[in-house]
Length: 440
View 1 (cartoon, rainbow, N blue to C red):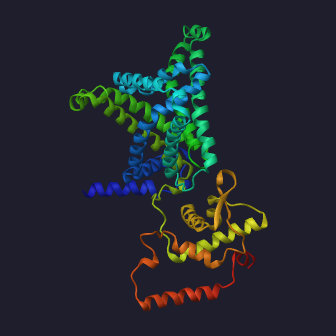
View 2 (tube, rainbow, N blue to C red):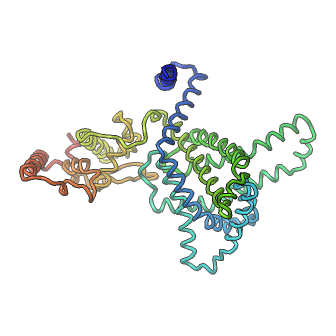
View 3 (spheres, rainbow, N blue to C red):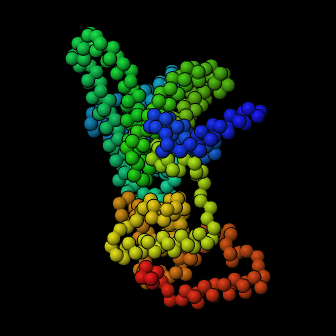
């Protein structure tokens, strides 16, 4: 027991107490990778990614047929709609013969959807079901990236529509180009010449990994409501792609081919196996998103994903500081600051900054603006925002209908003290507004 405790302590010291800047690059890179994996494992142990994956399984079951129906309609305009079933078979290949049954059933459902019969209301519900799936995916990714602000309604409509309409076209175009190149006579001739034949065989085996990594990179880059670096998205996509293919092989070998599910669940075995595969797929996708997040933000690896715990004094000071910086930049026309810029200016964690900004937005004092609504500006004129409003906004953040100051039991003496404190604050800050704060 003592040896295990000593070994654990040594590993903890090596992993977390080693200064990365003192190590050569060939040692720092694997240590950084181990730290990222440890952070992802910590997040998985919390159970929240598991809950989100299960939620996505439920939404996928409801939205899969409408999603394929919409994609089918788009691809039909380009004359490549016949490729939908082979692509679906490829995605469900780990399920073996059961995957073939599920693919045929889904295509049968899609064929039964007649847009002309649905009418305007039915078509709107069809598109809404598809958009709700993408919205749920965005919500899961935003949680992984610690993002509390969401796209505007217009932005969601345009971005989601591009995913639903353009995404299938790009995917099947890439598959078509790959198939055309693979069947060319030049490649057939090169395949007879060594070492080109062995090289082409290796490329053919690696192509599924390349395609799935490219698809995951596109998802990690586009879906989160933040600017994701390409190299970080690629890092998460490489790990997720390898996990996807490896898990698919293991699933087909040990799960889909097992007769125990059929013996226990009888006719429901196909559905149970399909749901398990969906769950594993979403878990892999969320793991890759977490790796991309920690790769882009290595400074957050040691931090837990829980909301920052700020004292009342820190809330008040931070609220005044943030309003001062944002108002000064807005008034002077110098800049409209993002969360990351404000955190760098104040040398504090951006989770704490985001927490206070959200409280100020809820009170109607700030509003997001600019590209992708990432910048912050005052929601009212500087003369209309009093210092008392700012302090009250950060103090009252978190109160709801079930628990507020006026719903707590009290006494006349306590209420007198509270009223005196509020009167003293208003008297001290009377007439002082945000413009006074930036001109001081």
